[in-house]
Amino acid sequence: MCGQVINPPGRRPPDLRPEPELGGCRWELCRRAPQPGQPSPAPAHPGPGRTRRVPAMAAPSRLLIRGGRVVNDDFSEVADVLVEDGVVRALGHDLLPPGGAPVGLRVLDAAGKLVLPGGIDTHTHMEFPFMDSRSIDDFHQGTKAALAGGTTMIIDFAIPQKGGSLIEAFETWRSWADPKVCCDYSLHVAVTWWSDQVREEMKILVQDKGVNSFKMFMAYKDLYMVRDLELYAAFSQCKEIGAIAQVHAENGDLIAEGAKKMLALGITGPEGHELCRPEAVEAEATLRAITIASAVNCPLYIVHVMSKSAAKVIADARRDGKVVYGEPIAASLGTDGTHYWNKEWHHAAHHVMGPPLRPDPSTPDFLMNLLANDDLTTTGTDNCTFNTCQKALGKDDFTKIPNGVNGVEDRMSVIWEKGVHSGKMDENRFVAVTSTNAAKIFNLYPRKGRIAVGSDADIVIWDPKATRTISAKTHHQAVNFNIFEGMVCHGVPLVTISRGKVVYEAGVFSVTAGDGKFIPRKPFAEYIYKRIKQRDQTCTPTPVERAPYKGEVATLKSRVTKEDATVGTRKQAHP
View 1 (cartoon, helix red, strand yellow):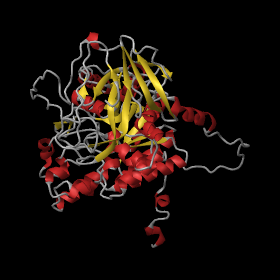
View 2: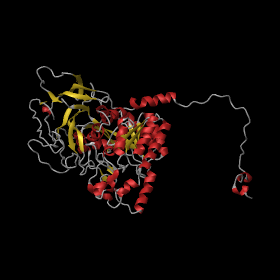
View 3: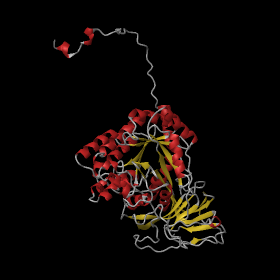
View 4: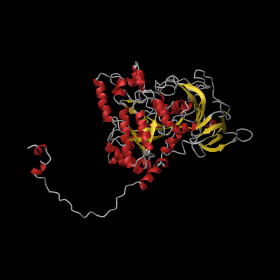
């Protein structure tokens, strides 16, 4: 923590030690957390990256963040922020009463720093059972890492098997997440097949379970993929119940055929993953999804936009007035697909995800420009991590490499570095694409995504000038590889506050499993449905009023004769 910290009686200040190796960052911010199942020593005072258990009586009920520059998506101002009972109670100047902090009020001096709404990662897969394995970052480790990076809420996915119950999948994911999460979370639910049961369960999830978003896969043939008619039906139901439709946009049939072709050519390594699912199959599916959604007048959200081609399709559709949103992820904004041709198999395999990173090295810069200018809207991570030994399930066949990369901890810093520090976007747009837009689309705003009176006190004190070097040796995720290895990022979270509590400060966690809560979301988010409802009222086709036709009408024959059947055939034309 930079600046003065006034601690309440009985609370010891954190041990702040310089860490010059982190590119000039003043405080030790990244230390690898113990791997799951590994015992860790219990020092008298916990070191960086450790969880400090704070007695309930020592935790202040009120916080005052003093003198920072409060940044929302629409404006910035220097102000104090008073937090009480997990909610922002006041914004203004000189909120500290004369005579200093009263008992029970902790003051965080944020002078010279930015005070941001906590990040919202719109796309994670914690402890996801996938491709004969399970992602290594569970809901505990993954959400702790999120807090270390300045993210205070994730939205994960409950994904049923084909033929499975959506409600049962939702309850299963809740049972995994509720006891473990360290930050708030919500759940999208996937539609992997179609029936009257699925239609009814979607309605129940929206009305009773706090779900307002459903994801359809256009890829993963024979596993999760749905066809166009199923997309049409699912989109229609989404609109009916006030949800937003999401798609994984790739042409699953072309991918399946391309994979067979690559294996037949003897290409078994990770490069085959990208070669069998090039940009064209992402762009085609993106356009097809937008076309189907437009036919239904259903709002559409394209997850993990990975290519320039797909991004252009989304940008063009938005300019044509379509209600569509694109979500690039930390990986597509921060690195590229040239890694698939790395000589080290494990290095290449750790970058395998679907859709793949693109080998065109100009892709991240292109996507960031579109994100900065509102052609793309939000940012997630698709955080779905597998250790090297898990990736090795596909050592002889790239189609068996579990798909997924990291990002939940590094998203905020990567976007600040590539977006704000580079001059492509300002601090307000940064807040929009990392938090506010997601809150608006998924109907969490203004409870989330904004620092305002009455909003949840999910707040990050951010040092825009500090730097840190990303590395698997120091990150807090369980995975043993980091796709951003060695990247130096300007923009460092010094303090993360979740639900009004300081949960991460100067490399030290003060959080326990289950501190986070499930956040239900209501349907018909105004941010997206105002336009949809208006178009239904004003743009619905109407019949042309005309006088009835009173002329002759041809008589249809009741059956086709043998002579009629030969009319226009080759046999008749050439007797």
